[in-house]
Image (cartoon, rainbow, N blue to C red; front, side, top):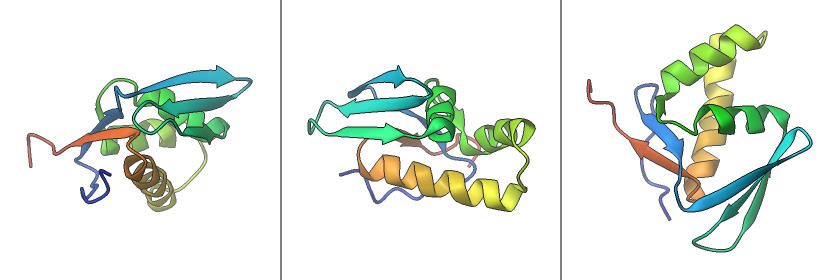
Length: 101
């Protein structure tokens, strides 16, 4: 599994190409093509999934979410990092370090 990469605000993330996903109501269902496992995301997780279909930095993702939801930056960053770490552990996320790092 991918698990060991450290995520930071500068990390560039995107949905893995080795998955297929579909919207069901306001949630997202993801099939990992490597292991055949299904994963479900609640409405906020589904929104984040849509935002990372194209590569983006975690910093830009958090900035976008702060515009859309009433939450402080520290809480948003912590929650986003927890979700992204979980996605990465299940091979649903590709991570690259920022070119500016």
